[in-house]
Length: 189
Image (cartoon, rainbow, N blue to C red):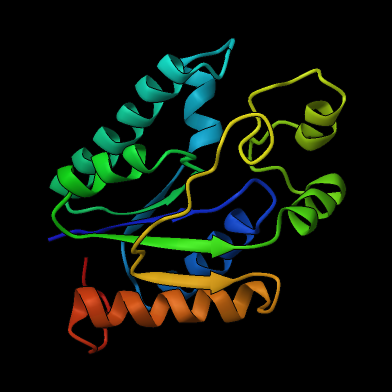
């Protein structure tokens, strides 16, 4: 049975960088997986996003359903998405039997600093915090709309204290323990 790991946190917390490091570890072990990035999916589902609550409900439902379909077809999934409301992540948890939530904890001040100097965008919009504080955007999680921290994530990594590879290693160990009984996942999908 395939699994899904949703990596959530504020914009700029390091989710995408951690996903890239984790992806490398999974590839070394021959694990079949795909990465679903909300910023990429949003461009298809809502090419002119408003980031309204209704639109977010629709896009996050599509994200969870896509992960479910991939899992049904034997593909493990890493979700790289803020998912600012708990209900978005809970919807995925309720749909997907082998599900794990990872919270990338990071102070918003550091997230803002990182986002401001981010080079690799992975489809993310630019200067979101700057736009939020200038009043151009009122929909930035943690500023204009709430970011609801997970209540009981299976894994929490503090990206203000750990580098991306250390965070990825913690998540990788949790994946091995939860989905492979602590054994080697080598060439197992």
